[in-house]
Image (cartoon, rainbow, N blue to C red; front, top):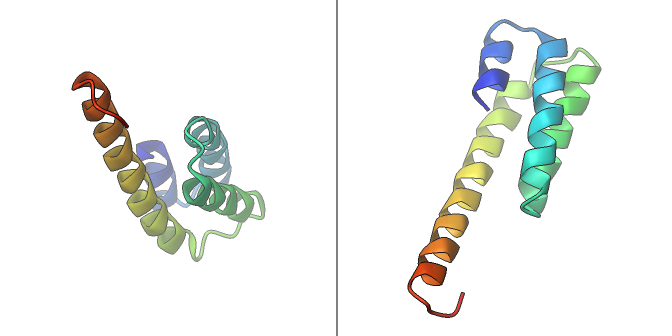
Length: 85
């Protein structure tokens, strides 16, 4: 995500597109549908060289990824404790 943020600061659409594509694969492996959709939206915007609303999408994506991380931590904690997920 840091790479996308840096690319957005520089308004480098191609770099945003490449970084979003890589992130899409990572997020998709966790079946995080909303986050994956937002990454796809960001990738498409960058592919069209249209970053004017990318910061809004990036903010939403950051919140979704944070929520996924909370769920993953909860899951791993429950697994370490031997409890049901």
